[in-house]
Image (tube, rainbow, N blue to C red):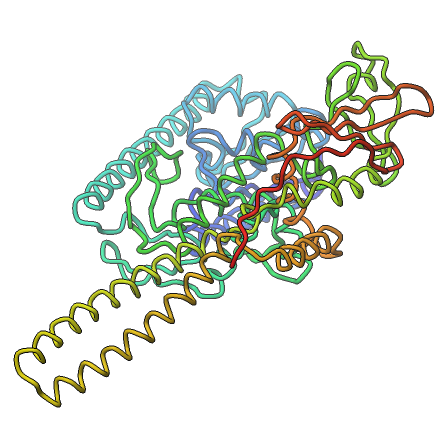
Length: 531
C-alpha cells in the first residue's frame, strides 16, 4: 500500500476577473486545498495558477497554465498516481458538461487523480468509469457551472449594452477603465479623466519620434536605455509602442467593442476622454509612417541600413538587391543568391556608393519639402491670420477716427488716432516677422542657409545615437525615393562594376564600384529661396 506522504499533490487555483485578485479568492482556495491535503496526508509539490482567466470558453485549457499542466500529464512528465487538487470542479472548467467530462476522463486515464475539496471527492480512472453516480455528479456539476457562466455572461452583456446606450445618449462613462495616461476620477456614470502628466509626455514623445521616422523597436530601445519603464512597470517592447500609436484614446475617442473585452466594432464614441493629448497632424503623420513600415520597411531593411531600399535592382534580372556581408557592406542579387533563375552572383560595395551618391544627389533630393515643418507652419498660419484680422480691425477703427476728425477736430480723437497708427505699425512689423518664420517653416532658405542645413543632415546620418541617426536616414531615404526611379547594379566584367542611377526625369548617372562618379547629369534643383 502506498504511503500517503509519498503521493505528490498539485494544487490548482483559478479565478476569472482581476477584481477577484484584490479579494481573498486565491488565498481561500489555497487554504482549503492545503487543509484537504493535510487531512489526506499527501505531499504538496507545486501550485498551478490561472489568475484572472475565465474557464467558460476554455482559454485556461488552451493557453493557460492548466493546459500546460495537462500537456505535462499526457506526455508522462507528471508521475502516475499524482493528484490534482481543486477547491471545486468548476475551477477546472465551465464549458459544456460533456467537454468537462471528457477532459477529466482523459486526465484520469493518464494516471493522475483529481480531488475536489467541495464534496470530498477523489476521481480516478477506475471509480470514474465504474460509478455512474460519480459520472453523473461530474456532469451535474459541469452543467451547473456552465449555466452559471452563461447567466453571468448574459447579465454582463446586458449591463454593458445598457451602459453603452447611456454613453451614446448622455455622454456618460461606460466603465472605470481608461488608457494608461488618464486617471478615472469619480464613480460611474459621472467619471472624469484627468491626465497623468508624466505619461502624457511619454505618449507625445512616442508620436513625435514615430512621425520623424523612428521605428517602434527603436523607440522601445531608447526608452529602455535611459531607464524609462513602461506603463505596466516593465521594460518597453515594440508591441506596447504600436498599441499606443493605434489607440483612439490619444484623440480623446473610445473605440466600441461588442463586449467589454471584445474586438472593436468600428463605432467610436467621439470626445469620450476629452481633448486629444497629441496634435492631430502629428497623430496622422505618425500613423502614416507606421502604415508605411508595415507595408515593407522592417527593422533591418529600407531606410535603416540601405537608403535606396527597393530602388536597388540587379542589372541582369531586374530583381531586388540584398544588403549583407560584414557590417552590411555588400550588395548581391536576391534571386541569384537563392538560385532562383539569375546567375548574376557579383557583389557590389554599398558603403562607398552611398557616400558618393549622397554627396552628389542630396542637394537635388533635399529641396524645401524635406525641411518643411507642418506643425509649426500650421501654428504660424493661425498666428498670421489672427494678426491680419487685428490689423484690419484697427485700420477700420482708424478710418472711423479720421472721419470723426474731419467732422469735428478733437485733441482726444487725434491722440487716439496717433496711438492706433503706431499700434498698426507694430502689428505690420510683427506680421512681416511671422511671414519670414512661415517661409522658413515651409522650407524656404537662402543658398547659404540651405548649404548649412545640408551639412546638418549629413552629420545626423552618421550620428552615434539612434534617436538622431535613424529618423534622419528614414527621411533621407524618402527624399531619395522621390527623385530616383531605379539604381541598376551591373557587372560588365570582373573588374568593371558600376551603379547606374536613373532619375525620374530619365537622366542617368554612373557611379563606379569604388564610389567615384562619371557622366553626372542630374535633374535640376528646385529650391524655394528665402529673401
